[in-house]
Image (tube, rainbow, N blue to C red):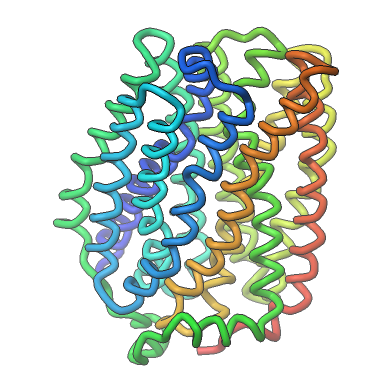
Length: 416
C-alpha cells in the first residue's frame, strides 16, 4: 500500500476518534446548563458523566474486540460510529435525569466498538518502528475531540441550548459513518510483522492466559487507569471549576479550555510518542518511563493550580496537566500491542481498555462529583478546589505503576 493511502487511513481514523471523544466528553462543558435545567446534584452529574457511559462501554469492549480479531474491523467501527452518534443526538431530547442516563448508556454501547479495533488497524497499517508515532497521531483524536467538544458545546449552549449541541454533533457523526466504510480497506493481520497474523484469532481466555503472565501489561493497565481517573475527572469538572470558583462565563470557559486542550494536549501526546519511539528502539522500558516522567511533572502543577487564588495563575498552572495528562496514550498503547501476537491485539487492547475505562471513565467524574457534594457544606462553591487537589494522588500512584512496568517491559515484549 502507498504511504499516501496510509496517511489517509490514519487521518480518517483520527476523525472518527475525534467524534468518539466529542460525544464522550461534551457533557463536561454542558454540565452547568444541564444541572440548572434538570435540577441535578453534583453526584447525579457524576453518575451521568461516568458510570452511565462507562459500564456498558467497558463490559462490551472485550466481546466486540473478540469479533474484531475474527471479522472485519472496518465494518465493526462503522456500525459503532453510527450507533454512538445516534444516541448522542438522543441526549438532546432527554427531559429528566434517567432519560439522559439511558441515552449516555447508549453512547457507551456504541463507543465500545470504536477504539480497540482502531488500535489493531493502525498496527497493521504501520511497521513496528513507526507504530508509537502512528498511535500517538491516532490519539490526537483525544485532544482534538475534547477541545472541539468544549469549543462547540460551550458556544452552542451559550447562544442556543445544550440540547442543540447534542443533536448537531450526533447527526454529523451519522453522516461520517458511510464515508469511513467506503474508503478504508481491511488490511492483512500481522502483514507487517513477519506474517505472524496468519495465526487464527485467539479466544478471550487464551489471551487472558498470555497477558496474565506479563506483569508489564497489568502495571501499564492500572498505571494508565490512575492517570485516566484524574484526566476524565478534569475533562468533566474543570469547566465547572472555572465557572463556580473563578466566575468565568460558559462562553469564556469553553474558549480558554477548548483552545488549551487543542494546542497543548496535542503537543504533549506527540512529544511522548516521538520520545518513546526515539528511546524505545534501544530500550523498551522507555515506553513506560516516558509517560511516568511526564505524569510526575503534572502533580505539583495540579495541586497549586486548583488552590491558586487568582484566575490568571490557575489558567497558567493548569496548562501543565492539560499538556501531559494524556501523554501516556501513544507509548502505553504501543507497548500493549507488542505484548501479544497480532491475532490477539484487539482483544488484548480491549482487556487493557476494560481496566482503564472502568476505573478512569467510571470513577473519575463520579469520584469528583461525590467528593464535591461532601465538601459543599464546608467550602460551598469552592468545594471543587479541594476535590481536584485531592484527586492528584492518583497521578502519583500512576507514576509508580508505570515505573514498575518499565522493569518488566524488556522481558515481556513479544518478539516477531
